[in-house]
Length: 549
Image 1 (cartoon, rainbow, N blue to C red):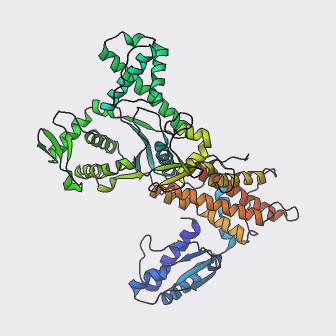
Image 2 (cartoon, rainbow, N blue to C red):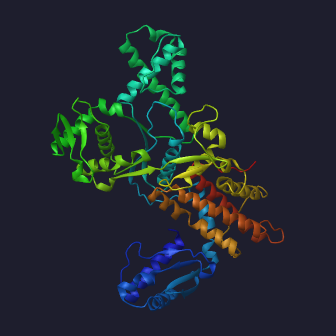
Image 3 (cartoon, rainbow, N blue to C red):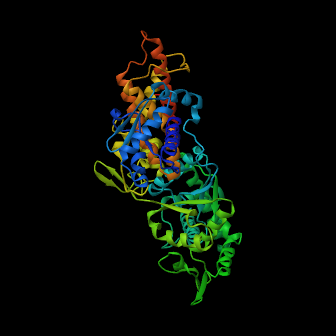
């Protein structure tokens, strides 16, 4: 909440207490910017919200509050009651313009806030198996998770970005056999690709790198030793490719957590023992079961099968215990839509182990459909396989790829229009936003420097005020987007900011030799806009270019 809005909230609370002897709790007093400027700069519906409590007519309540506000608010030029009891405020333009220096002073840090207050969050996303290239299905979650981490950091949370490597279990055995088969193929030897193995071209690439470095060494060793090597080297090379592709996509991680390491440390055995000791399990038909129905699941789940092998759930439980043991109070997982049914059993385990039920939150990533010329694009034109993150970025650019994925809420299906993403028109939202930044840079390049002024008393046109009010909202929007993990709210903010700036630019002569004082003030507003746009785009991992092609 910016200073103007916070002052309004605090003053309204004081007046309500004075007039009605009522304490208004957090969130009771809401301040909004009216869509129509005819209804003032800010508005509140507090009178209607108090109607039931006070059992009085809302306009009568509003009249009493207005009287108290007029005696206390020095920065309000006018206060009016509208409709059923809205209270509208017209704030002194010099007060609104104070945001310009706030932005200039904060610079790259404008928008940052401490709403998170150091709260520890572990954010896990992507976590694709190390058995193939990252495809389009991973791209949306990667951009979303990375942007959420940026928002958490900007809002003062203690956020760890983690990639969980699923490197234990049968899929790794299949990786070893697949790499070995392709390796043998390179020497013209008989080979058999396992039916449940990995047949992608990336596996051929892994085998080629092994041949290049080791020659035929792994043709002439004990098969068990060879498979151990192919598993380890296959994983290393696949993870290297994944990490490189994610860096290219501007996604980096603080922690790469190995499932196999968790198993090797005995954490899975420990987790099962904890559950047994808590009476959360029972044995039936030689298997260990989790009483998950007692915690909201639709059926009980097997933890250890009768053959002695753990199910996928058990190491996942151990992994989450390890997250809590590292001091994180909120665990956030971004999972694909195919994991939707897995959420209740994981939440059941968390609750059964004694952790707060809301300490695990899972955001489901809905499907993406690539569209070009009205037709769905399912396969890469170059390889005939599913479109990869790198191929998408090479086609439309990293900026467009990230922005388009972030522009819609994660729980909605997304039609990704490739033609629109490539276009250099105002219909392309990322182009429209970046053009606003480039335009501000062009204006500022025409002067030697922009002065920080003590007052801004000439910025009074509707376009100027709209722009300043929206810039003033940025820290609040960042805090809300972090709390709700909604990078799309930043996209919405950027589009509106770009719209306000383009409108201001088209309606006002910014550099006016006949009016040097007004020129100085407008240039400062342009600089504040530039800074805010750059910072907002940065939260999405999108560049803010100074020039556009």
